[in-house]
Amino acid sequence: MTRIETSSDGSIQIEIADSAGYCWGVERAIDLSVEAAKDTSRPVFTHGDLIHNTYTVNKLRDEHDINSVREVNAAPKGAALIIRAHGVPPQTKLEAASAGLTVVDGTCPLVTNIHKKALQLLKDQYKIFVIGKASHPEVIGIVGAVEHAGGEAQVLESIADAEALPVMKRVGVVMQSTLVAHKAGDIVSVLTAKSREVMAINTICHVTTERQQEADHLSESCDAILVVGSPHSSNTKKLAEVCAKGGAPTHQVEGVTDLDLTWFAGKRHIGIHAGASSPVEVIEEIIAFLLDNLVESVA
Ligand code: SF4
Image (cartoon, rainbow, N blue to C red; front, side):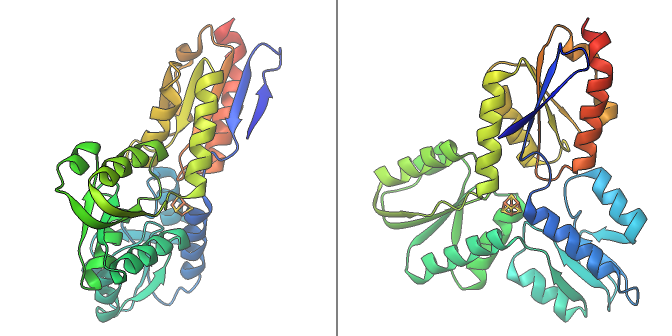
């Protein structure tokens, strides 16, 4: 679903994806962090930046005194440590608890569910594969959960990774929550062709699916598209790829100051989408700026 805003002279339409902005998993992690910071008897740290968005990370620091640490042992004893929506391997939580930290678990329940599915596959004696990006924290957390339970999980990033595997018997698959569905499907097809049995569990989050469907729609209907999100956010990058599919010039911006009005010269139908870590106030600021400024720039 999308909403449409029209410039005051009616010449330009801006179509905004309904799902643009924080997903509920990210919103939940932010709410938990703000709640934890109300207890001022101890400092509060996030394990890595809570989300890939400078605006939000700075706001948490400036308004709630929430800072981030890369490693568990960088937080002082007695502090609260927030786990991000991506989750972590169980070992990380144990390490934090034994370092005297209070763990506040912001892992998205949908990510926790992927851990559970992977552990069930392990119990059912499948050879486990995780389709996703090996270096992504969510994937590191899933693999870590399987290893913590005494198993092994191999990450498949591409069709080539799957093609390089030998013939197998029982294969179990889970997926990073933010994958593009057809890419995961292509990899599962390769596994199916070389395995006696494949139990592929679609763990792509429904928010991601909705976001990608709206990106598909914008790519077909708009003549220029903005995707709001940090350059470090992998889900924003994937979204921009989907938006660009239809050939409309697609620009990734973090905030209103990154905009260049020359991008929209001659354009009449502009799409706006945003990754899961983009705050709604930043998106609305961009929309308001375009509505105020585009009329003259395009004329
Ligand atoms: S994208 Fe989905 S799985 Fe990931 S944090 Fe958001 S709601 Fe949770």
